[in-house]
Image 1 (cartoon, helix red, strand yellow):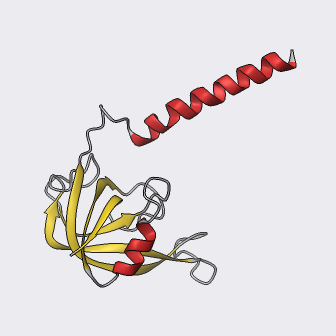
Image 2 (image 1 turned 135 degrees about the horizontal axis):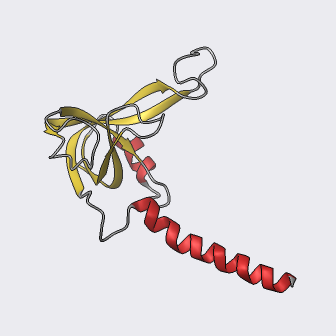
Length: 146
């Protein structure tokens, strides 16, 4: 009986590991979000983090984020945002987010590029998490120095 349970559990874990990433990433064929390339000057910004995100400044951690000051302001449509901000809204800054499993050298490249003009590409999203400090988030897939 123990072997039977282990086999079922292993099968369930394999199934979850196979299906779950497709759900998280939005799938590949049905994903309406298109990759965009944005050019601008990279800067860092310090924000309050957990536990209170600025509500309790003496106890809150400080979080350093990467911000791309866009060369030209972009509309919601130009940023290929799936939903969120108003359609006519224009943005001049985008928060950059690195996914270490998909692009391990992202953070290192961005740290070396602070103050420089760069082009980044990836998929955009609106604010979703407490650590999304700007209305537009770019999940970085590529960094090119200008």
